[in-house]
Length: 446
Ligand code: HEC
Image 1 (cartoon, rainbow, N blue to C red):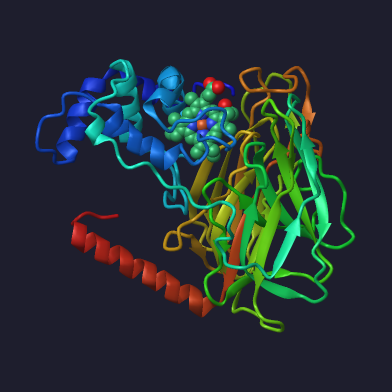
Image 2 (cartoon, rainbow, N blue to C red):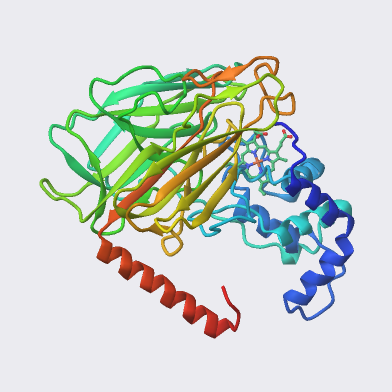
């Protein structure tokens, strides 16, 4: 993975130089009885690894090594420190300094946790008192469906991942067999062989659409993003009365990134769906579409490190954005979304660093999901890096727009549902009310 010297990593390096100060501040924030002699694995680090790392870093999962025990982590201390400092692990691109910070399933490390890891690594990674060790984390049974028994299970064809091979990006199309339009109530993707499925995203496409997208989730214009397999995620259950349309005769497109792990493994993954009863139309219909396509064809000179593209989509109805997924290719570096309201005020919603290895979906927490009035424009800003700093097929090449992995893209997958103007007003008033309450109870403005 490319080492970037972003403003964030510069700032973290500075923190590393003032570890002592950081620890004193930590002690002052959390009331502790005795002064803390040092940061230890058993007391400070193990809980962080349990929450943010072990879902992937344990036997049988996609990550290359286990981070369950002190013996497991000991050889990796320097690398753990580096990945944590650079915010490369856990994979999570959201910029903590910009916009909304409240997401479902956010595994990212807080700055004080990163400081602890750095201080602990610099102190020689002491194990500490065995009695401090938290109980081992229990993992959900990944063989069971967390959304309940699906009404429909769609299975991808067997795919053989050789013992040693380059990473494989590609798609499979499988008919749903659905003969009438139905609305999805809950949905869950289940990787068959978690060790080799690096990521899996699923889309609903019309029956006649089966162009191989070569790992690119944008060629089927009519496609609707459905769901993502993410380690530790237990499926999406839409709030009562809301759902996603699955059309009669539609197919599921499985977009895989497979990764070899030293032994030949055959994978078949599944998408499980529970449906609302026949004829039922939910009050709120969830859409997921590619929005904010660049207004101009991309024009990215060889060796250029920071090329920007902009795209705009107008929402004709009021609504609520439930999730954001940046989409670029190998030169993608960062993407931001902002809303430009009808009164021309703009608000930054989210910025996320991007790497092609991780197609992450950022689902806003229910009470933090942004709402907007009719006539609001979504502005998508993408930055592309075609320099040797980034893992790059060839930084000497000019790159333009296109569907192949070696071409570039810059749009956002946005999930949203429409609100009536009245619903929008109600939600807005509720948000204002909530803000007022927090202000009085905490004595500080939000
Ligand atoms: C979503 C799954 C996932 C999570 C969560 C995750 N990792 Fe990783 N990690 C990976 C994968 C896959 C790789 C190998 C590919 C890569 O290097 O990006 C990796 C690589 C690493 C490496 C580099 C190993 C090497 O070969 O040098 C380190 C160190 C690491 N992770 C530490 C962590 C730490 C610490 C956390 C938690 C704070 C964490 N990871 C959370 C999936 C994950």
